[in-house]
Image (cartoon, rainbow, N blue to C red; front, side):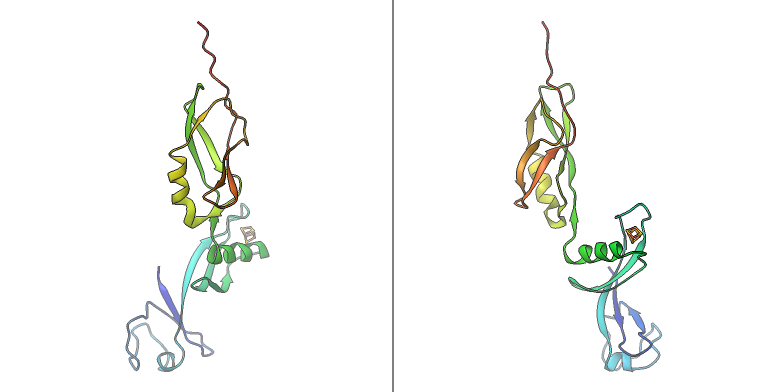
Length: 168
Ligand code: SF4
């Protein structure tokens, strides 16, 4: 990710990947004066993200310092701003996958978390899912794993699966 530095003067002049320059140096990035070096270089990261809240899919530029949101541009409604804030402060995703299904015609059952879980927990979640084996019959929405990744959120079945009846 690129790191950006913004001068605090009225020009808000922005430099990309300014790290490592010595105080007093001029910059090849075309700073208008040396004040940017003396006073104002306030670093922050800029991320370009796409809002997935609705089908419009606004592309937003999000300035942040760590988990502190500084500024959002490019959104066309307040929900976009909220989405950007969540992406910086506490990004979450709905985890979808499949588990092994026994006693059914199909061998895999689609599963998902009932609500989005922390993005940092996705890998841990996949390790759990890879070990789950379920016996048919199953109804869509059945809870297969409570308190998944200790998130307070359940892993649920994504579809019905009838039991396989073998007639001799
Ligand atoms: S910012 Fe608003 S309009 Fe744009 S994608 Fe997000 S919810 Fe939709």
